[in-house]
Length: 153
Image 1 (cartoon, rainbow, N blue to C red):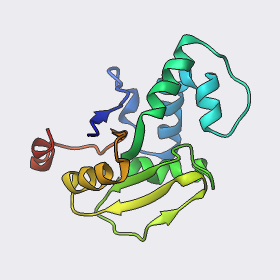
Image 2 (cartoon, rainbow, N blue to C red; image 1 turned 135 degrees about the vertical axis):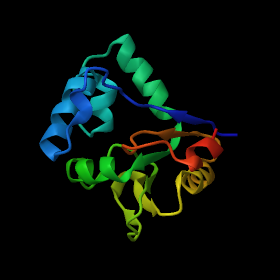
Image 3 (cartoon, one colour; image 1 turned 90 degrees about the vertical axis):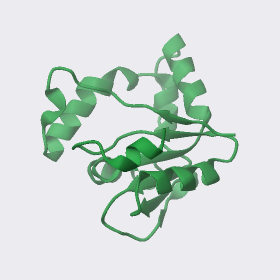
């Protein structure tokens, strides 16, 4: 049975408080920039090179266990132009949103399904898609806790 895991980076100094695309990209680089030179990260991006380090091997092992991902609409909106035609997920991605959209299929096994009936529904769909692999929640929304988050524990 798959597990639901959360992979988030948190800014304790307020760097992640911006609201523009430029703010998002600078935060992304400041918080996650350490992974950009890992061989495993570069491989998932369709690039050659990178360092083969213990961190790179750990990143590869963790990435291999993921069968589906859940992201927030904000992460999708700011990031999908950079992910291109062959995004690094290579698995179904479920976008939690209040704005419905048709499913988008990309190269390499990535698809984006827009889930408008809450996080619990996205988790159910992602678990189904992941099979025996795990589901990664990566990204989210700003704002107060919602009752649906409590039901997903």
